[in-house]
Length: 115
Length: 112
Image (cartoon, each protein chain N blue to C red):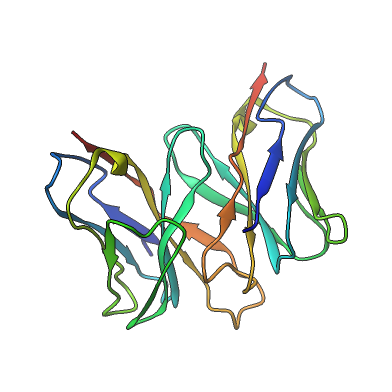
């Protein structure tokens, strides 16, 4: 059981390039989220999904796109990278709301630098 | 918009001391989470609280819904407790299925 995996661990992009950050989970959790973490700020929600085929915007969605075609995968796409998107990105899952114990599970993070 | 404030931002203590980290929030929530982030970045969930108190080993978390305040306590602190402790709240669903709102974290250093 690998939990939540993210690839790549590190990435350097040039301004204007596009890329996809991968997130996968093998726990059959319905709910998945993407956060970014910047120095001096708390983690901020980018997008989230409550199940396959359903996504919604969080606090800072501009410049990012998501899709959820399967329960296992929740990729985050940067459409045209900007230096302001330099950050550490975390994917997280949570057991469905039917559980009495709704623990958050975080991936190891992807450190992205945009030049 | 819910604001989540943590105090202190930084805390250095000696091994064995009793540690308290505080978290306050501005609007009603469905649950509050305490998370731990070690150097190197991994984030681990410690507690989820909607009322009362929870204990796990040397860690104790309490919440006062009326006062919109939570505390995380560490008893008999140890250098391995050195980490960033993060408070987060979920507004609509207990587990934060629609995402969490985070505090900026408390950087704790326990010196031997």
